[in-house]
Length: 394
Ligand SMILES: Cc1cc2nc3c(=O)[nH]c(=O)nc-3n(C[C@H](O)[C@H](O)[C@H](O)COP(=O)(O)OP(=O)(O)OC[C@H]3O[C@@H](n4cnc5c(N)ncnc54)[C@H](O)[C@@H]3O)c2cc1C
Figure 1 (cartoon, rainbow, N blue to C red):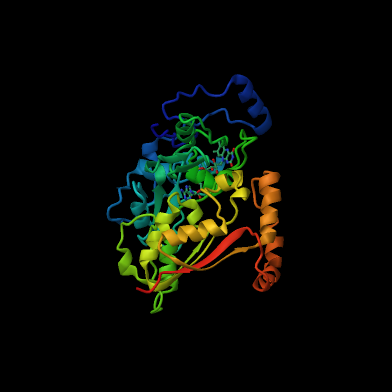
Figure 2: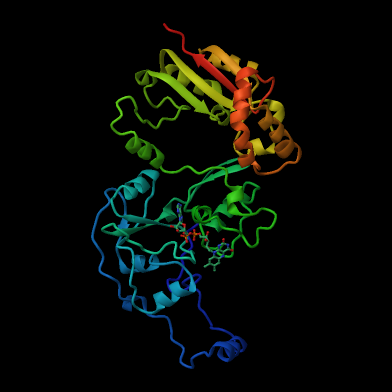
C-alpha cells in the first residue's frame, strides 16, 4: 500500500479540497472564541523561512535537504505545531531528512554523530518529532517510511513481525488479507505507524476489546545498539569479546569461536529447530566447554500466553536431556527450578487465562529465600528446567 502523504499545514491528504467549516460552526466559534473576520489562508510553502541547514553527509544513506522535506519533518500535528507551521517562520527544522531503507542504514544514521529524531507518521502532539539539536552539531529527522513491510505472520502464535515505518492502514490491510486484525485504531490511524505507536505506547480510542499497543507487543528487535553498548562497556577487558551471532544459522565459522562456556536463558523454546541450534552452540564451544541453559518447563503448562510470547514448546527434564545428547552434549545436571512460579503460571495464565504476568515484584522479593531452599532440596517440578552440559574433550 502506498504511503499516505500528509499536508504540511494540517491534517489529511494534500489533494483534498477543503470547503471550510459550515456556517453554524463558524457562528459558534465566533460567539465563543471571537473569530477574526479576516481568515488567513495557509501560508504558501515556498514562502516559509527556515533556519540555514548545517551540511553533513551520512555515507550510504539518502538525505533530503529540500525545504519541503525539512518543513514536513519540523514538527508533529498539535495545535501549537500547526500554528508554528502556518506562521511562516520556523525557528527549528531538521538540517536534513534521512530516509533509510535497511537496518544498516538506520545504524549508519545513529553513528553519524548528529542528533537523530525518529519520524514515523509525524502525528505526535507532544513535540516528539521536534528537531532538537541538543549538544550535537546538527539534527537529522530519521524518516522510517521506507521500512514499511509486514515481515511475517505466525498463524499459530498469532505473532506478526513488522518493520517500524508501516502505517496502520497498511498494517491492518496486510493482516486482514491473512484473516487477522491488529485491532489498534487510534484517532490518528490514517497516518500513524506501528513503530510510532509502540514508541509512544498509544491507546486506540476505537480499540476496546484489544487494548493498548503495549499489550499487543511481544518483543522489539532494536538495531544492534545493545551490542555496541556492551562493546563500549567492556572495552579494554582482555577476557571479554562481544559478538552478535545468530545461533540458528551457520553463516559464521563456529569452530573459530571456540568459547569455553555458553549461557542461555529462555532462548531455545523460541527456536523451531532447537536441536539444530544446540548443535551450533556445541560446535562453537571448545572441547570440554560447558553450556548452562534455562528453558520453560512442562508442556502441560503450555497455553495461550506461551503462544503469545512466541514459545514453540516447554520442556521436560528427560526431553531436554535427550535433545542435548542428540546435539552431541554430555549432560552433567538437569533439574527443575522455581515451583512457586509454576503454580502462579498454572493459575494465572493457564486457568484464569490472564494476558500479563502479575505480582512479579512481590514474587521477586521471595526469590532469594526460594533459591536457598532449592539448593537444599531439588523440587519435583518448576517453572523452568535448568541444565548444565558439556562438549566432551576430544
Ligand atoms: C488527530 C490526532 C489523533 C490522535 N489520536 C490518538 C489516539 O487515539 N491515541 C493515541 O495514543 N495517540 C493519538 N494521537 C497521538 C499520535 O498519533 C500517537 O502518539 C501515535 O502513536 C504516533 O505515531 P506516529 O507513527 O505518527 O509517530 P511519530 O509522531 O512520528 O513519533 C512519535 C514519537 O515516537 C518516536 N518514534 C517514531 N517512530 C519510532 C521508531 N520506529 N522507533 C523509535 N522511536 C520512534 C518519535 O521520535 C516521536 O518521539 C493522535 C494525534 C493526532 C494528531
